[in-house]
Length: 254
Image (tube, rainbow, N blue to C red; front, side):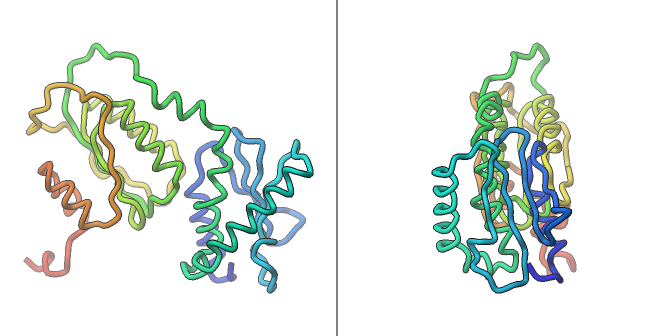
């Protein structure tokens, strides 16, 4: 992590953390950082030294209750992940961000199954009438495997249909009952994001949907063109173009 992009890379890592996770810098060891979670016994340590050292030695997984055999197992696991992915991570320009979000953060969420199981449970039946609506979020990016998994689970439990556009920028669209969408928005906002913005949350007067869907439907796309095509299929392409996304220079001159 070069001095020129250290803060940017740390900010990207922070924005990928869940609410129960924190990133702290060591007060005694320069350029050493620790990520902890209130829901996990494990800690992720990484050192962004400028020295020419083996990449695997920059990462550690620790726990207060870890036996020597487990520690050796984690060391071997880190070596394997670095051998597989470090060169690719360096090419992105943000190697620590790439390695941590792709490989290390999921470790902190292995003890977070109760939360995810709760998301899968059907919500308490509502007595209110169905009011169709839709929402659109944009963010700097959507990469975290945990966020992507939780978006799928949350939309399912709230009977919403929508998609998440993975990569840069991040785009989240959902449609369903307005009350369910408001709950969805509150939950998504509670996660840590970089430049998350709720563009639209409104009722859909043109919808012919009369009630909640079964378990909801959630998809992932990777390109802005695919997001536009998805929205075009439900007559909502304008939500994205009105936000300035997917608009070409030729479009702006019309």
